[in-house]
Image 1 (cartoon, rainbow, N blue to C red):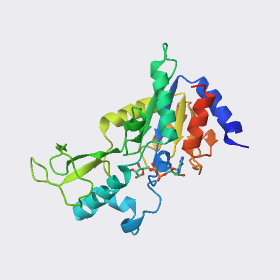
Image 2 (cartoon, rainbow, N blue to C red):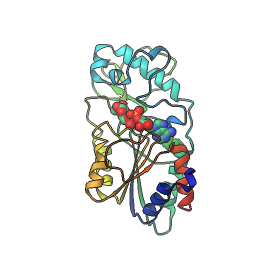
Image 3 (cartoon, helix red, strand yellow):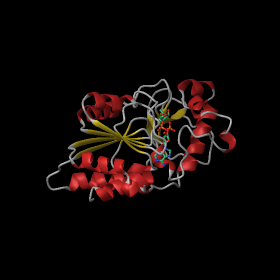
Image 4 (spheres, rainbow, N blue to C red):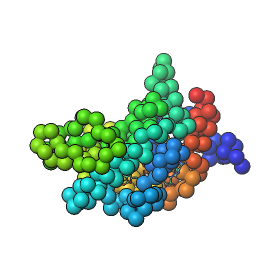
Amino acid sequence: MTLSTDTNLSKAVQVLKNAQRICILTGAGISAESGIPTFRDEQSGLWKSFRAEDLASIDAFNRDPKLVWSWYQWRRAEVKDKSPNPAHHALAKWQQHSVKADKPSQQLSLITQNVDDLHEQAGSSATHLHGELWKNHCSDCGMPYIAHIDTGSTELVECDACGGYVRPSIVWFGEMLPQRAWQVAQQSADNCDVFMSIGTSSIVYPAAGLAQVAKQNGATVIEINPHPTDSGLVDIQIPYPAGQALPALINQLGL
Ligand code: OAD
């Protein structure tokens, strides 16, 4: 069976055609086909011996700010020339269609755990649960740092106001999610008819709990992931790469 004749894809299309409120949660897998390694892929090059989980924490930054800053500068250099792939473009087309329709029949919320800006580059508006790679703030006084930072340099940058070290505005392990973004995500998961989980391992909370909330409230849960997760929550699995599955899906939705 090919993707276009996959019965689960057809089931998803039927459910989505009748849905009024759709909540979409994306993870690192949606950017994989743009050439950005997923969070739990083994790291490459200089960083091969480190686990991302051990670097993305406030403890790691306090212990060795230069190491953590250098890692983010390396990640920024890796991501800076990457472009949205057909999955990002398909979601943007869908979102734009739902906004443009004369009588909007569908409300589509796009929530992402990704810190890259590929959804925005494709033309989507997304709620970022885990922060944004290109933003920075002071680790001491919290003031946003808006001056340009050269991705080629690994030198620590100091805050203009207090001299503290500037850090990426990313949610690290042990930190709270941005309040407003989390509220938006919860509301949209609470009220949706269909919850779509795309390219996420669904193991990092609280984001992973959104599918549970949606399911408890009667939503159908659809997952797009070539390696289906075993969350036990999914009603319809589409076990294909997002860059193939999403264009096929919106094509069958007639968009
Ligand atoms: P992970 O790296 O944990 O999972 C990526 C998922 O994408 C896996 O389940 C892959 O099977 C799937 N995948 C790979 N290629 C794909 C493709 N082409 N299409 C669709 N799916 C594909 O990434 P996340 O679930 O996003 O948080 O990780 C969640 C959070 O863990 C991250 O946001 C990060 C980390 O802690 C913070 O940094 C706060």
